[in-house]
Length: 193
Image 1 (tube, helix red, strand yellow):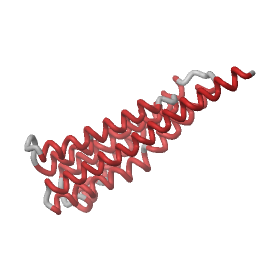
Image 2 (cartoon, helix red, strand yellow; image 1 turned 135 degrees about the vertical axis):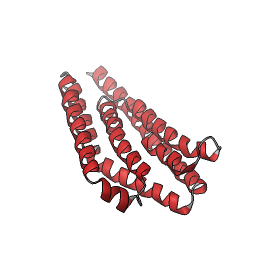
Image 3 (cartoon, rainbow, N blue to C red; image 1 turned 180 degrees about the vertical axis):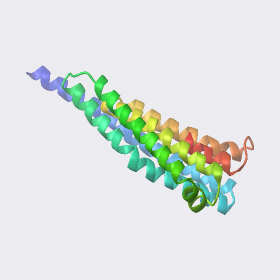
Image 4 (spheres, rainbow, N blue to C red; image 1 turned 30 degrees about the vertical axis):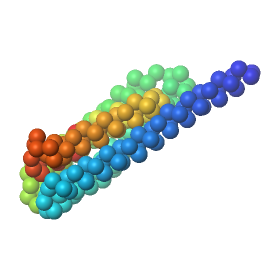
């Protein structure tokens, strides 16, 4: 019985370390995302920067409403099935089907509302509209991966994923700052990354 307690304590400590790394990863992601906006604000006109902020905000809200529930469902269900020794294949397929349905539903709705979104929200900027649609759709895959990684207790990989996303996003305004790329579109493409 003592070895079971020791094993449980070791497992708890290991999970605690991974969870701490995830918290640190979220913090690092926040700092890197701040750099995205700081660099963008210096490289773009106030109007262009404002449009990028509006796009980012819209993408963030839509992704949180549409993608996060699937992430949480997948995470919880995978974790429960692994804890009880059940296979996870069916759970992953169901979540993937839901995620695909959400992505298709969003894309259809975004196309139907293209005029109001493009003209009303994005000042008629077609490129920003397509970047927004692409970003919301791409985030579906990211949130699916996050849910799977969290549910299977791969928190270090989860942290690496979100840090990698932030770094790749911030590379776009950095490329503008270094003269490798130029303009609002180049900065905004980082939102899809």
